[in-house]
Length: 193
Figure 1 (cartoon, rainbow, N blue to C red):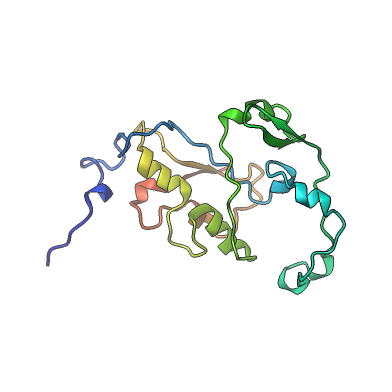
Figure 2 (figure 1 turned 90 degrees about the horizontal axis):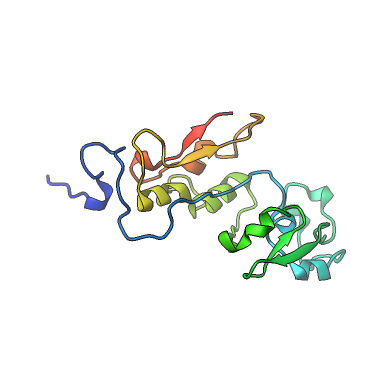
């Protein structure tokens, strides 16, 4: 029986960790993906919601508070307690929490389209990190190393840093930075605290 394997899934030579060039011409040289599990809310940091400010204190019509985990702690809508200003030529809205980072917004890319239908932590984390609510799919870092290649055989091209106080990993653990069906050299290298 003959098995055909796509040439793009085979490493460039016998050493899968050897530096290689990207498969297509790219402008990006590196990517820093910040996913702060359990960190400050996006509506208090980088995702300005003017409509939320207008509706502060209002009840959300049709909302069933029995669908979540904190059924007795659901209150009305609440605006961000922080002030927001536009920065850079892009006019990116930034919370007062980041006065120094706000000076660099034109050099940053923001993804405000992440969404999941799951209110369960593990599937929601998988969705944000891999695009699927199920385990087994490559995470964004794996796709980036697959597409951009690597610069050094001696250093990992994709690293993951977890809580420096070692209070635990995100739900789903290493599946959030796994290579899924891509070759395993594209999975993240966890830097332990």
